[in-house]
Length: 397
Ligand code: NDP
Image 1 (cartoon, rainbow, N blue to C red):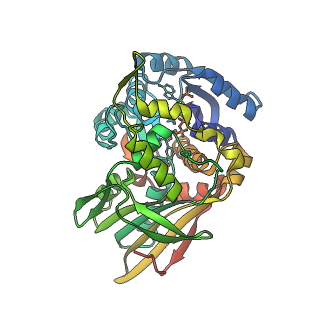
Image 2: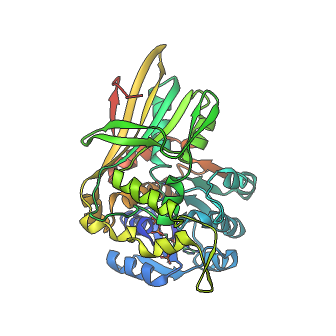
């Protein structure tokens, strides 16, 4: 039992607020804070029952965060603002003795580069303060890392090959939209491809490696190797991995829009002067693109995200596929958000439950695969993200 402060009132924050409010046997006081308080109020009102307090906070400002932490006195902060705010929120947590959880690793605003090094550097500070920091507790990173930990614990003596496969077979009816924050999403998918092989990182041009992969209940979808943040911690925590890759599906229409956006300079993250005012093109683009939080109403179809693993058990080679499929319509019905927000917000809530119950609590900074996966896996089935396993099948590796 304990008090939770959710920071960020976007698509993911909305889902976290709904799910936390469904688990008030674990979270006995809830506050939702963000840059725009009216958004927090609207979410709290939709949930009803006066379950959620709201506040305004500028999460770029450590002093502002400290003021809020000292007045509400949370046990845990669930950070579902943007990756830019990770370090300021971690600093405020250290200053006020609050535990921390997030779903995306830090990236500086002026460089499209995400790495764990900035947050891993907080290891000693959190350890000395006796506080827990849980990093990357969404779906990917998050559940994909926990699926890997679960496979390594129960089904393999050594894992050798890992393909994380992320398919969104949904249709939102728009010509172009991103499923989560457009600025973060476009920065992620336009970077160079990168995967781990034989002890080193192999870099490719963006979207250079692709092939159709068959997803359960969906069928074949063109899938592209992109770099994704959980690969960094997984290859460190599972040194037996000979190769680790991340595949994501993209439609041709999406890729064409992305190419145009890049070619015309709208994905630039450096400032340009427009009518005497400094603007950042990708931030301007975000302002005119559909809000991912409003895609839910017309979203049809489902997502399918999982891990395909090859390795050794009792001296024999084994293949294993563990995945979850999530319906956009069902997610919307429950929380008013589409499945991409839902599949991120539910695991963040479960991470909070793990912390509050004392199951995932140790001083220091940890990626989710460093905790016991079993109670988390149990909660996935209870909280709306059931998983399925397939053994000894063709993994299309
Ligand atoms: P949104 O853009 O919809 O929401 C972000 C929220 O954070 C907004 O409410 C925004 O406020 C608020 N915010 C931004 N800056 C500040 C600030 N300085 N102070 C206070 N609040 C701030 O994003 P999403 O909900 O789509 O994504 C949230 C997070 O989830 C991101 O970090 C994203 O990378 C991560 N994510 C992780 C996934 C995973 O599987 N691990 C998958 C998808 C997303 P305002 O409303 O005023 O703009």
